[in-house]
Image 1 (cartoon, rainbow, N blue to C red):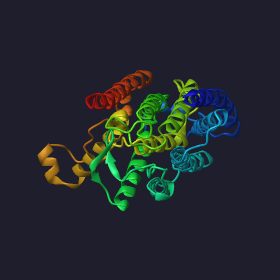
Image 2 (image 1 turned 135 degrees about the horizontal axis):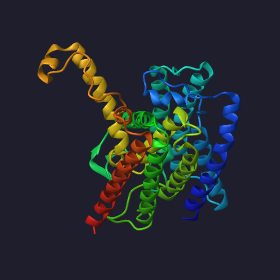
Image 3 (image 1 turned 120 degrees about the vertical axis):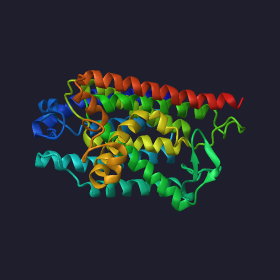
Image 4 (image 1 turned 180 degrees about the vertical axis):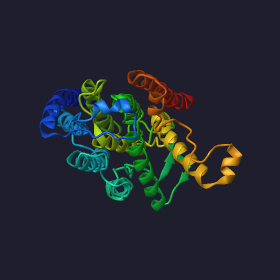
Length: 369
């Protein structure tokens, strides 16, 4: 448990101080954020704000984790190393996208296809390693499971190895893109991630307290390395918290795709490695809502242009838009809400989702008593 506190505290301190240093260096190098012309006009004042701050979150989290392990004289586990791999790997894809944007000074980074390929390589590698027998512990547990999970593994819902890897790929790419879509207002994604990763810290601590290796029985969780996962979850929580000091409105730095893709990849990694894949839909409910707003907006827009039957059934004009602008947070901005108001209310929504998810998680355990 000491490692959990150390990991979170060290990462917070590095992030808090390191982000200030990053702001100075990125400003000197001219690594400013290009702003999309079709977005809210209020965002044009943010043009040139330093970006790629997500690199500080990644560095602080990784250093915080390994420092905690070194201080407590414990070896890193396979699960934590895999989590760091998907975290850093997704961040590298985001960094390439950000770097192209800032060096060319336009909002066109990696193409959509190139970004998906990069995420796919990271997701597939993570899935294959996490499900591989090479990383079994002394009880035959691999870091991930071929069974689909909600609060635990669903025993009757076991997938063939190929389908299980594909499911991991979908979760990693889907979640990393979902967090990326939410990163559009000062502090929105960072604050939401603090709550979600804080929740995974508690989930991992609870799973460790009910670890099957310590006390086998119907109440225990068949998860590998839960306490070590709690250390990296606490480190990411602390790093996001420290970064939020500088990212809150008015933001002095943005995390960029470097941070949003990395945090989304890590979020997916925790869902997979803790055997709580479907619970992620509740804990990360805000990201689900924002992603669905984009899917609905694009789907209705294209269907209304391509299908006369669709227009007649739903009585809409060609090119109909459900929202004024997507993703969802920009719709409310367009309605006249202040940016800070949108962020705080979306944080409240995140808190409600996280509280509901943790409540469901605990209630299932109590129901087994």
